[in-house]
Image (cartoon, rainbow, N blue to C red):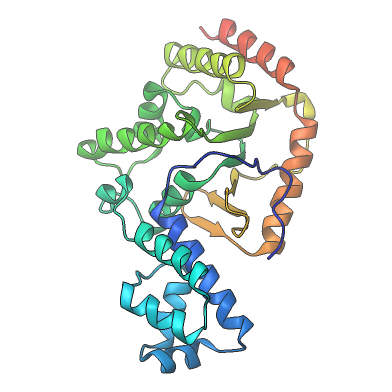
Length: 299
């Protein structure tokens, strides 16, 4: 398994469990063991009396695995007892119902899956060009974004969508809070989402986060004066996880589509792009000064 990138923070404590991430790790470990044995998914399915599609679904973290099925695969794959105990713990965790499941009728499956990855990540790097990152939005800003940016959202869904965004922000607090490194375009700070009063409160909130949590939250502004830079074109996020077995993922969401990218070569391209954009952006102190200046100008 490839080593974790240096940008991902190692933590000694426990990251809140995410059923999505636990199912993903369980599937990866089963697939790795199957491939070590030189066994195809078809052969594994035949040996265990299940279909190849079921085996592949489990390995992708998209299909739940009952205890008896896992025990069967442990025997077929000749997995040692210690690792079998670890896999069973992952299986039990993957069966749990997370808070975002209550919104399964409100959001598409890919977004719900992203919420699961976000909940289990320990570091997110993001580039945001028009809107501030969802984890950094005040409730008033989030409401204005949802009201003005999605013509298909019914008024009856408004509060639930806002509540979802606020619930995501719980990962910024607690014993092992999520680390967030974001590069935000200057235009996103000047776009008057919700009007001047909402934006002033939002920018004040950003300034507070930068000042009070510098080791956890880094916000760098890409000024207009930077001109063309590698991240031009659209927002993206790179998610890193506490388990050394799990590779980074990229989440990209645009107007009409969203995508979870897990191909290592593509993820590496995004990581390089982010690193270059971060270097071209203003430093933390300069970014804070610009945010405060824009706040004063917001009338």
